Amino acid sequence: MPYSKFLEFGRDLNPSVHQPSNPANPLTYCLLPTLSSQFAHGSTSAGKLYSNTNSSCSQFMAERCGQTWDGYCDAFVALNTETYWPNQGVVDQLAYANAKQFWRMTTSVGEDLIRNTMYQRYICPQGIHVTQEPFDPNVANSPQIHMFDNYAPYYSKVVGLQDPTVVRQDAHILKMLDHAKVCTDVLGRIYLGYLRKEPDVQIHGSILEDFFQQNESVLQQYVQQAIQNVPSFQIQNQPPYSSSYAEGPRS
Image 1 (spheres, rainbow, N blue to C red):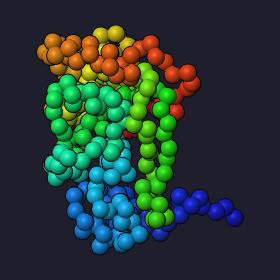
Image 2: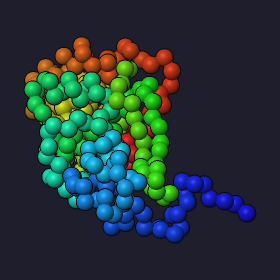
Image 3: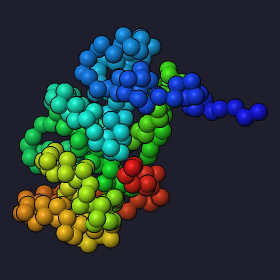
């Protein structure tokens, strides 16, 4: 008689685990900047409930919104306007910090979600370590999330832009361009791939190519200094081993 793996336990009893109204759905922990979710989850998960800016919520929201950007993603951006929390879901901290310094700007928790989502969807840093774990280990059927090292010491690849037809219809591209400053490091790395004619950057005739042509001067300034200061923009520093994060965007 086959037995279920522990991470599958409870799903048959609660098949709607991913429904927004289900208490096991991380949205019930992460969407609102409030302590009221403790009433739904109890004290055993309190470490995740004191703030929705913890690393688990940040990673879950970026991964979820990278698959489909919907009203819950927009709500998170609109509701989380604080600018004093660190970005707990950042992948490639140096690229993120460099872009903020370039513009001399601060970003909100909600804006960081936009950047983190677009980075995970379109940029694949080489040689970083990724683990998989349950969002809430105290809940048997809690969804699995990926946790990333935030330091990317090697060259990155652009992914998800191989088909110009898809690029022209991609809602994430439109969202990224609507928040271009927030996503400067992502757009800058794609622009660098565009200049280098990397085979995975096929954006001819797309709104993304139009944006690059209209903002060529500032993008040139950004990538020139990023190549000097951000390892993931430097093509020569290949990792000495195969990347543990090489699957590209989650769709």
